Each structure stands twice: as structure tokens, then as C-alpha cells.
Image (cartoon, rainbow, N blue to C red; front, side, top):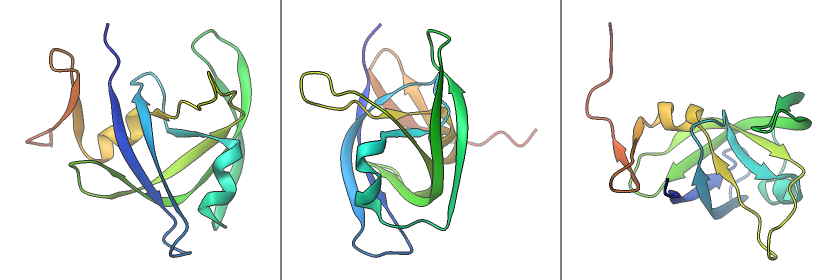
Length: 128
């Protein structure tokens, strides 16, 4: 399998100027936009925050904090409103690896093109 990464900009609509840009790994098994807890202050204060327990792919339970709403924009797509999950991450070779989960992909809407290793717009939404 290939790795699909995309450029993401996250803005706090309640504090103009509080934003960050990063490359994120597309992970359709993850639910949220997942960022390292170390970056949380860069996005300022948010009106809603709640502690959550999540399960990782290797079935470990970890704590996190879901915050939002934020404006999330992927390169080539319209901005959407969504939540960010902050967790304790440990940098690999000095760099964090944020994850882009299915909630953001569904909000865009975007699909994973496995042959082209990219995200593509969904042309029609299913209303059935």
C-alpha cells in the first residue's frame, strides 16, 4: 500500500490569526483530524473541548482531547468546519505525523484514489 499525504490548514474561527499548516497522513481508519497535543496552543482558545478515550490500531487505549469547531481546509478542497483530536504524539526523526481521518473526508467530500495515491472530490452525494 502507498502513503497518501495532503497539505492541511487549520484555523480557529474565534481567534483570527490562530492557525497552523501541516502535511497529514490520510488514515481512513482514524476518525478525526489528529494533531499532537504539543501544537494545541498554536490554535488558541476553543469554545468546546472534551476528554475522550480512543483505541489505536494496535488496540491500545489512549486519552485525547476533542476540540472545536475549527475550519479545516485541504489543498484543492473547500474549507469545512470540524473538530480536532489532540493526543500525545512522539516525533519520529524530529517530526510529528498528523493524521487525517474519515470525518473530515466525509465532510469535504473526498475519496481516496488508491491507484493515483491522492484524494479526489466526490462528484455526487448519496441521498438514498
